[in-house]
Length: 479
Image (tube, rainbow, N blue to C red; front, side, top):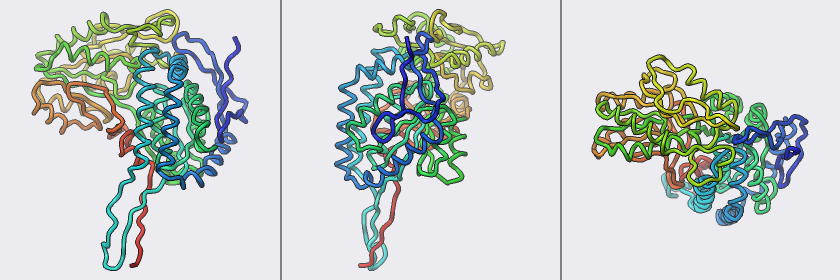
């Protein structure tokens, strides 16, 4: 069967790339290529930026209510095509269909509607006569053309996190999806193009070099990326010569601190879902469990039971089945990366569940639990991005906090205890942008998502995420 030939989306229409280079798009559930995407070059990026800049000159003048109207129509269009978009996302990413439909497409629609409302909630200091005879006012303006680079783990939803606040604020966007997962973003662009003025939203496909061209182009005033720490550093360096604003949502290594007084059975079941959802390919995944010594062996056994008995792993032919939680990893390279962590395990570590590829077609890896690790071990310090839970014991609260904070990342964390005061002390002490108490991984559009340290800077979602795509101007008038 011939490969589906994908096109860029520029200035309101699908456009063939001026580059002859192509990349294969592979279904991770089967390991087989089914589409071909452009590996766009400088001419493609320049065309998208030119269209976005031309559109910005008029789109920035639209009223908040007009922009709200655009976003509400887009949300309804995506909702009307939810099954189609979920199918595209599943084939491109290997996700379980029912989970994708319920947990990702529905969430993305809700997030668009939130930012539609945020468009009409511009905030700033009250106008006032702060100096006698002079009236000061704050004006919140769009930044300009925004360049966005999105990851492969949640292609459609992460694109929404970029363009929804940007458009709500009156910006225009040029977005590059991951070279392995461009399909749903391109289809979403077509749906958006039937609603938005031409040039407001553009999609340029390509590899890392295409992303560099996007970031270094003279037109965009802001660059936003969700990706690895390495990618974030490269984007920040590329944006530095022109002093562009950067919004970085990077990796994570979330600690899951479990005290002995927690409901261990419930905690283990909930942690397993938060660790294995999306095959663990989530920067907030509950992969690093730190347990009070008195409950350590019990929690190791409970997590192993969850992995082996209660977590349903899909296959090339069962990704539509009800109850499937774990799909394949994104690519063969990612499968090999996860396998490599197990190949390099230190002698003191023990694999109590999983630890190997599932076999058969596709890039599936067994839900895994690894005990006996030390704080300095690679599996504890580095983001695995696979269905792997590590478990470590701690002696007391101070040790738990030190172990939780003892990584380069600062994105998300959780604490599990029946002691409310202890939970609040941990919330205060944890050096992470999100702290959950007796739960892990839920996100809502109204609250910010973003980290500290090597997890980047800036916030997605919420009014804080909206403000990232605005600039503040002071206007002073003599009375």
